[in-house]
Image 1 (cartoon, rainbow, N blue to C red):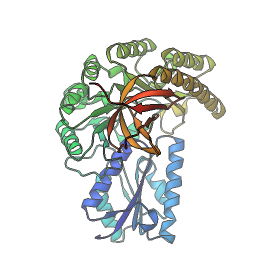
Image 2 (image 1 turned 180 degrees about the vertical axis):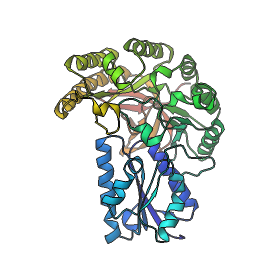
Image 3 (image 1 turned 90 degrees about the horizontal axis):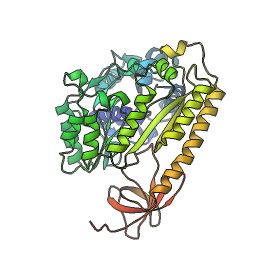
Image 4 (image 1 turned 135 degrees about the horizontal axis):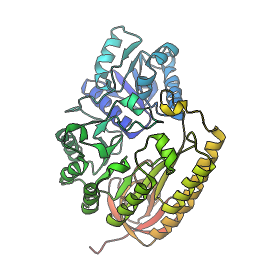
Length: 447
């Protein structure tokens, strides 16, 4: 295996990205060379997403595209991992003969063993088992993010069992990583130069419950903020009915924790929420949002909604539109409902046609665009600590404040006569607002 080159394409969410980074770390430790060009690779791994139809289509397209390198490149092995592999392992092996192995979501840490078996002549290998959280203690990672930012997975799977979602089938029930393991990995990341750690899991707010400690996310945050060289700690994917007062207090109190919460709500109509198997009421949602805005200074709230869910008539959709107008979320994403086989919602008889879904999606995003511009205008004249991520042109740089998560949110463009480096934190005063992005200038703080 010495000197063999491995290339990887990873699709889907940041949790899947962490799995890819673990596999790359294991391969590097095992003596493989990681390459970015598929035509140079002896082994190509496609780490797939299988969450909704567009993601599945993207994954299939990627597999087919990489399969060509078995005939016109140096590729000897094509291996498929991730959620699509977990969901459709037999179909992938039978329908795409170029695939040498598929590896399930609970087995990706066995990637070296799979490659060894394939190199010995094994083909059509399926290494699945039940989806679960592998032991990640002392497992290396090769970061695919910029050196100053890293995702840290604190749990795997989900036990919420929303009626539209296949995640429990693909990733298993919610399982928390032991706290000492999470803290050790965070320490290692910071020692290697990471300044922003982004905590991810299908449901961060359930962290610790399965370990017999009760909800422990706030306690974990209390330990993480002690890391001396850490600047930002960001949370993604918080389930609304487990955002506790203790969690709110520590976010509002600790400077290192970004005043930013991603709370996917999916809908606001009580009937639709019940059919989605979401366990909170519209009144509870409004109460939580009011509490967050009252107790966390300048909090930035992100959410996502599903439109076109079975049974969503014009009245239910209008209620959602009115809610978006009322609450004025800082960040908002919309998904057209995807009918996923094996989920309770897939057998509902009152499905919505695709044209209606797309029309409703566009209507919400049009409202959100206007809300975003109004909120951005309110930021003009305000000052923020901005993490520089690169240069746009001449003396214009691209960055983010605490209110923008990487890859999913907008940018702050920064004018600076002084050269800036990626990974540098600078003080920026906002001077102009656009629909989503902002423009600002560096200045010397008087603090």
